[in-house]
Length: 223
Ligand SMILES: *Cc1c(COP(=O)(O)O)cnc(C)c1O
Image 1 (cartoon, rainbow, N blue to C red):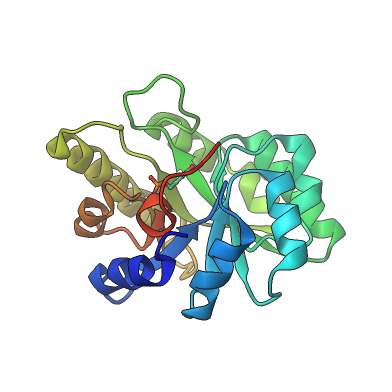
Image 2 (image 1 turned 180 degrees about the vertical axis):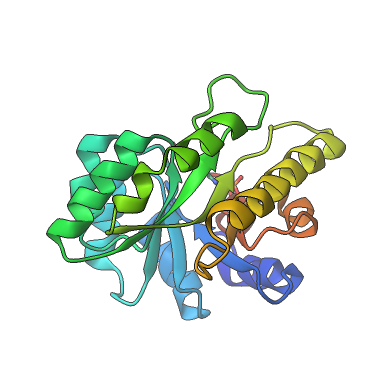
């Protein structure tokens, strides 16, 4: 097994106060999660609902799970009872479904709006314009069982660090704009989730509050 404990402490050692680590454990076995858990890590991220359900069942109950993948509306009901945060909300339809399923369980589920800023075509998420439109439209205000807690994004998967920095800065600026316009009196709208294994150092410089790191802790994924 990869030296999860050592890697975890290395990553944690580089994060300033106020930046949380979401340990991305997708495609890694439960033993890897347990190794990180023994070192005190309690926040983990998964991207597939069935894999997550299997892990939730066999792992300690005080783990906080974030769903970080693309979520189909028909899968929301499976994770609604326990998920702590759904990071990649990319449509009003999905937001409404999360609200409905959260209400069935008497919960308020925290969510992030996923931005699409990267150049890759295939990625999900709102363009900055679509994100503004969603908030301006105002329907979200009636959804009492979801709490929009911030923004999430993935930068382009490129070597050019200045491009990554540009994209993350754009996301951080958009966060400020939306905060001022729609969430000025909501202290819970505070999360900026960007930064993965290869770019979380840049993300921290670009005001991330939440980095999502998998490979640097658990090693390469076996698909
Ligand atoms: C897999 C994944 C990560 C982690 O990527 P690493 O390169 O392994 O750190 C972060 N965010 C999202 C959305 C992911 O799907």
